[in-house]
Image (cartoon, rainbow, N blue to C red):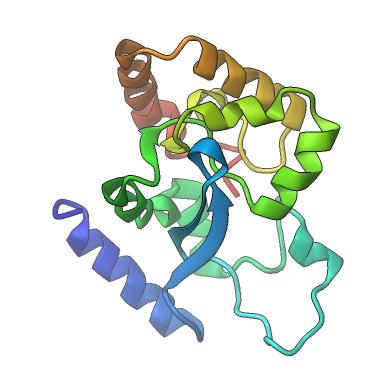
Length: 180
């Protein structure tokens, strides 16, 4: 956090000056053992009117050219810099640097019934990066394939595997065509 603090401050100020709303976005996610926690990210979408009805688009993953994403947000997502506040989640012990990405509780409920073995992902801490992400499975990609990579990680976890994923993240995890 100390190393990234100047960059994080600059990003937060850019978000605040470019669109109304808070710079940090909080959302409920599910981690180890089904624990629900608040994940922190830089806000990349326009703030919608709290009184407006939730549209179908708000219930979906972000897609390429999503109209909800701000101009600054698009760049933050493309470079994965929107994820930096999750270092706070790591320091709190709610997340790890490496592991399956945490999902929203309402999607977990749906996936637990639709996807056999989905809940096995929660046998390890959720991570900022993971085997699925460094293999290009992020954004609006195949859930079945992402689950396959997550379960491979859970089954084959080792410290060396985590180090490998962190190393690969430097080259393939930050900027990727599926990061939107």
